[in-house]
Image (tube, rainbow, N blue to C red; front, side, top):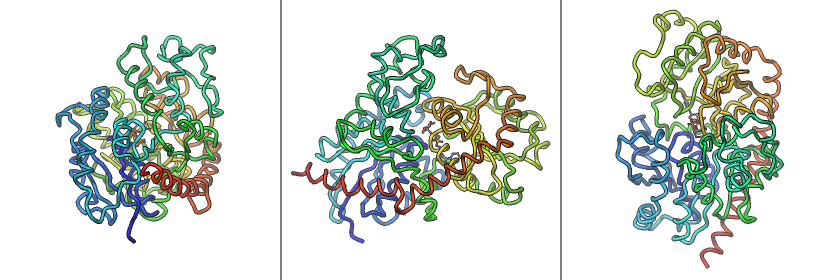
Length: 477
Ligand code: UDX
């Protein structure tokens, strides 16, 4: 089919940012868009090293554009977030240049730039190219609102979040729009935790918030039935449309498209699927802390022993860099002792794992993609947030949606060590919880309904295609 529309998609270059944008790209491609998918050279290299076949032979109507992020190859991008964000902010000129020289016959004119909400460079880029900027939130609507309205929170004294005062009842946040329940100070993006508003990360995220308030259309990777239409609408920029279109991975999964694999920055170990085939139905706890969380050697030892003592079959994703290069992170004799009951892999095909009938529960860092993948397959969660939006996700999973738990009484806000006894107890509780299981099944049904023809996310995405085409025409005049 000849395509007349063209979306330039600019993800935030981390795994949890690239996945949802690639999922959206496939759904837009299906709806008549030609796709230019922008990767930084650093991510592109990692994807190729992980076996990224899609990069070498893109699907029809897709192309990958690769640009330098301006940092040395060895720079610690995730631990030095300020430098990373600053470097990404400056990408507009190089991206514009690359787009202009590569627009050739057969490629339709650009309809819109869809930029992850932290890719502030897409504002200037869209302005220069005279096309609409779509702000795409990869986090849940509630957290996105708190970031979108960060200036308001600063003026009310909720930012910065001083941990010493955060637990006081009078500090509940009730001034946000979108019919949100009162938020705890520790629900906010963890980078607002500081003693002063002049803290460099606080300033950086306030700046990002200003840039997130500029755009022509808003998309959110969430489900209206979960968070409410009002919450999504609260992300509108000056009255522009704001639509929930998630969970974006799900329609791709249902269409048998292995989308995430095409842009994975880690080599997937599929052997765990055979291992799961050999386990009893609903008997396994899946353990993964996403793509960026790190843990100390001591903490990993406690997790290992807690899993062992729980006596439950487990599949544990232990990324190579989880302990930042520390060797020998597992207790002596551990692998030998758990051989018949546990499996450790470096990186799993997570969506396939969570959809496997042997999996009963998920011990997760509560990254938003992981949370949506989990509830879409009816898997209750034991949350262990690490940073960013994960604290709010974890709390909402437990308190609002009641589809999971946390480590009761353990102050993970202050990065306290979770002992082997606490791990064991947590695993047992989530594996035995009937209430969380029943509730998550209901949510699974709602998510399925939302992405299928006639469902809220399905219709919202169609509406987006219709409306952005009209908006783009008005820009071209
Ligand atoms: C980051 C932030 O940590 C998160 O809070 C934010 O919501 C998105 O960006 P990340 O740590 O990568 O994300 O977590 P998450 O959002 O859960 O995304 C991880 C992705 O990697 C998921 O799509 C998951 O399916 C995939 N994954 C993870 C695998 O494919 N295999 C694995 O072994 C682990």
